Image (tube, rainbow over all chains, first blue to last red; front, side, top):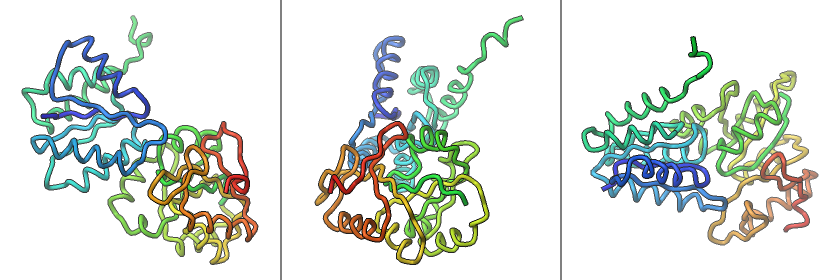
Length: 133
Length: 157
């Protein structure tokens, strides 16, 4: 049963998934959807709705960019399934966010995983040279 | 307001708009003209949140947009007009708005819609609306990204 969905423009979502697998080995409950050129947006929305409905009433969506279509469509699905599925949406997905979310996937609810995602997603962004003494 | 682009884009505020167009054209304000979305408080929140930093998003019905456009002629802020439906453009023009150019960006595939370009599909009725706009004197062109060439839609329909 899926608990985390990674969404992106182009193949980024798939490659984040594959790269996480390279680092963590096999894991469960995570899936992804890539938004490719020419995609029918109604169909895209239906696919996300289907994935959300097939969870244990909770889904964390990690989406590439605030304001992009994957985000907008996720927001629509959130609103449409309100009361039926607990959907959380975090934007700005990156590799640390994906990895730490997967680490916690069995122990935490989606509401808790959301905080992990935000926390590790932002902690991974560091201006290295300015940190040197 | 200084209108730097008027565009049909079914996806409204999205990746191409927030990353490419607003930066290339130094857009400070996006005005979405759509009577249905103007009434939808949830989508209004989502689209407002979707705005890139330094850009405001406002959503108006066709009628309210007309009064805004008429009242803010002295405002020099770079503004992008975004439409979800081509019919809204014709409504606005018929109400008296003097639109010179219309960019057709994204209109997805769907039942009864035929391909006009790689990213633009229209029903026969929508093509008629385009023809009406052309007859009124609007230059309607296809251009998805700022880096793409403008293509006169007349040649494609």
